[in-house]
Length: 142
Image (cartoon, rainbow, N blue to C red; front, side, top):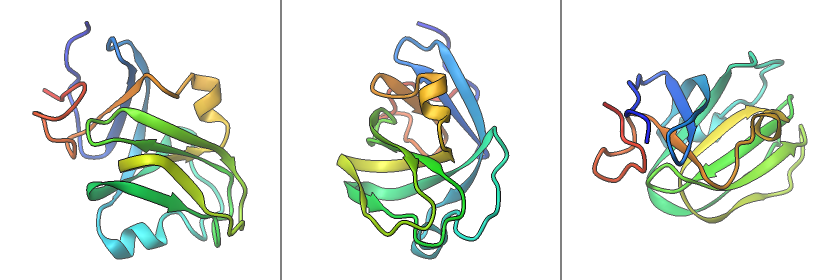
């Protein structure tokens, strides 16, 4: 297994379960109700290596929608250890259809639509970030 990554609050590090790097995204954090509600709405674009990490206090089923979101997004749902549980790929802008997590999620990463597929982000992918408690993280930060 690869060494634990050096993490920063503004970086979401995605790896395979064995620690092989996949991608690092510069992220904004949405960790309160108002920030989670606003998300990436009304933004005309998102840099390719950027995203938003939604942090919930505990694991629970969640659903997202794209009501006032102007760009297609991949919505990546992760459990309390940072393991991907499901991906809603290419979510359509301005669509009110609920996009559920397909299980209990504590973290959600939104990135540009189509990137998850191109990078191979899915089941078996792990997020490392300081928001994930070291004792709980599938791949803890150092």
